[in-house]
Image (cartoon, rainbow, N blue to C red; front, side, top):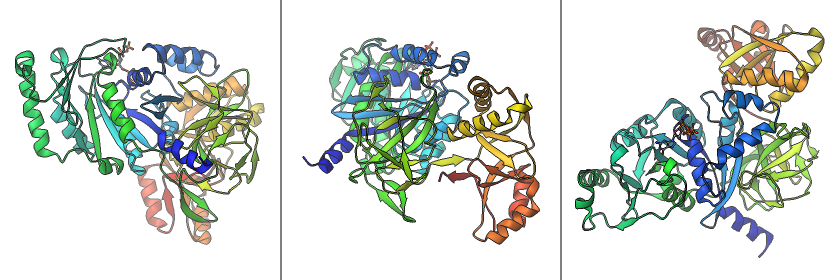
Amino acid sequence: MSVLERIAQQAELRRTFAIISHPDAGKTTLTEKLLLFGGAIQLAGTVKGRKASRHATSDWMALEQQRGISITTSVMQFPYNGKVVNLLDTPGHEDFSEDTYRTLTAVDSALMVIDAAKGVETRTIKLMEVCRLRDTPIITFVNKLDREGRPPLELLDEVEKVLNLKCTPITWPLGMGRDFKGVYHLLEDRFYLYSGDKHRVSEIETIDGLRAPGLAERFGDVYQTLLDEIDLVQMAGDGFNLDDYRAAKLTPVFFGAAINNFGVRELLNGFTDWAPSPLPRIAEFNGVEREVYPQHGKFTGFVFKIQANMDPKHRDRVAFLRVCSGVYRKGMSLHSVRLDGPVRVNSALTFMAADREAVEEAYPGDIIGLHNHGAIAIGDSLSEGENLRFTGIPSFAPDLFRRVILKDPLKAKQLNKGLDQLCEEGATQVYRPITNNDVVLGAVGTLQFDVVQYRLQDEYSVASAFEPVTVHCARWVVCSDPKKLKDFVDKNELRIAKDHYGELVYLASSAVNLAMAKERFPDIQFLDTRTHV
Ligand code: G4P
């Protein structure tokens, strides 16, 4: 087999995805069960235990422990059904950072978890908006059927209306709560009966045929309800269509109770059968945008996340890179498109079953962790030498702003160094007004400020405090005419700042202020996302 054939074959096996959900819907539980079914862990319960011990190895992650939440994302790889599944975890707390968004740029599909009692919740709506930007295909899992929840038809109706996504049920619940008896698989025409075993992947009873003899006697009313609902579903829907799923026009829906391993195997089977293998990515090459296919012979990838000090013994950073094409081999030299030169990495890691291992080879769809001392920034494209720059790894305009107060004025240098590094990791955004020496931080969640404060103290020995600032929103400002841009900047200099990359930003004091600026300067574009260069 030629190298190109091998790359194509390996890429075809990859399924790279993330779970999107509102906190408490069951993402952690489902992750654990997916690993259990994937054979990556023997007994459920290991994810939490291992997470906790890994946290303990890192100083600043003590903050995570204090809060009892996971701020950082991680990557888990496991084999299933002959496929190689890469699961990118996203932070699960109410408060979250840009990491969550950017992680979604590194996946080919997503799994949406919905709590059967709560339906579509706010965070899910927000994350779906991000998935929409790239038409990411979504599989839905309605969780916690072992508890009383809302009627399944109502839940699907809500997904269709609120998320504007057509639903095609693949399984359908037989009862709910105390009367939960199992699910009926519409494509297989088979019942999977609920056992409620919390810990082991036990064999479960199945019955073939929607109208198999004895079902009415055995299950009574809940069976009749299921027959009525299936009738409605079949009358209303066109059934599952793979192309529509891949085009993000419909979502196949599974029901289950993750906590008791129920419905997870069917979900994983559907997922590995249907979810797309690595898709081509848009990159700019010599000023022209083109698609880079996984089979493209040369190695390329982009960095979507940077994490500091995963290992306190080495105070370096790990850049998470999604392989887009070719093959990564251990020890190979990497070219940074941004720096137009080689980057030195100390070692590379994969995330097989969440235990970090040294990589021998990584293929399109895989994530590798590259140890470096700050040469790699978020959004960087790395290659074997080609100047292919992946586009579309966004910076989001933050919603929250604070002015930094330095407690010891002699530490200004350390403060700036620390902030620049934290900014490159995506922990916060830094704005420096052009008319004074203030430093304004921006974030998409308040927790980010706590993290920055903690890390400035812990890693850079800088004591800082943050105070409110009258900034309502930040917009990158661009204009095709440099003269008009200069005129705009001159007339608004008190509200203009530069971001970490030196790009001009307008710090609007209120929504009205922004609206007025747009009206007075119609040639200026006010952007709320910016692609890294
Ligand atoms: P998250 O990562 O999306 O935030 O949710 P997580 O998995 O932590 O689950 C949130 C809560 O919901 C947990 O309970 C978990 O046990 C429960 N849960 C998850 N799946 C199911 C399910 O299928 N059925 C039922 N009945 N509960 C489920 P907790 O009490 O908050 O935490 P714990 O003490 O049980 O860990």
